[in-house]
Length: 287
Image (cartoon, rainbow, N blue to C red):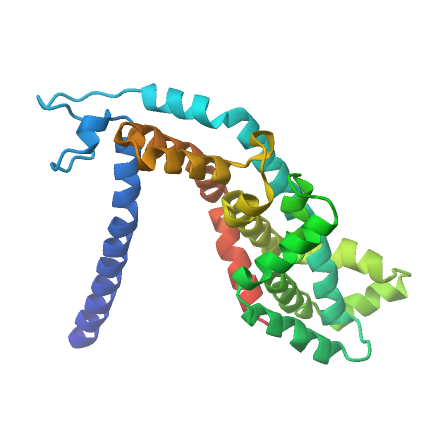
């Protein structure tokens, strides 16, 4: 019995020790970034590592000049508005269309359903970079270059989201749907009044991941956006990084811009982390 307790303790100890090491490996760089955003350029270049801003005399100090410069350079208000419009609309449209598709594949019988679903899943193996040029040609043909619509239209559907919603809807019992049909409910009523509320944990995690992906998307806006008024945060930060690459004096402003961009995502994760875990568990277990 003692050997069993010791073995159990050692397993738990090594598990927590490993998790702590990984946590430190992820947290330290972020803390350094936050700390460096309050430093002057000469202190960032010093070889002495310190998470607390200190000058050469060892005195602690904080400067907000980096954030003021980053906000002015990026036109933060406009970038935030564009980014939230794109990410929010993309998330709402994506969830609605993918939920409809997932419900159809899970609960509606039609000819060739399984074969069509396998073909759709096969498309997940195509690298996203391969689709950049075809999507660009379509957007150019539609005359949507340099518009926010160009950032929304190509990402209104997601094969992964369709797959996860299908797995979630398949866990809904047939008896529940039959009881609703006896009461006179049609398929769309069952979808909106029964299936969607049951799938709420999965919808929440997909909403968060979809919003975060669109929030961080850089390559596609770089290809289709030309004017400053249509830029997103990721594109604006990319321009700031490019400007700072040849000017070390701009390093603190670049870091401050990175901190500003990460704040909304951190807030979202803090408030919705329990929904993320619940959604992953619900979507990953099929009854």
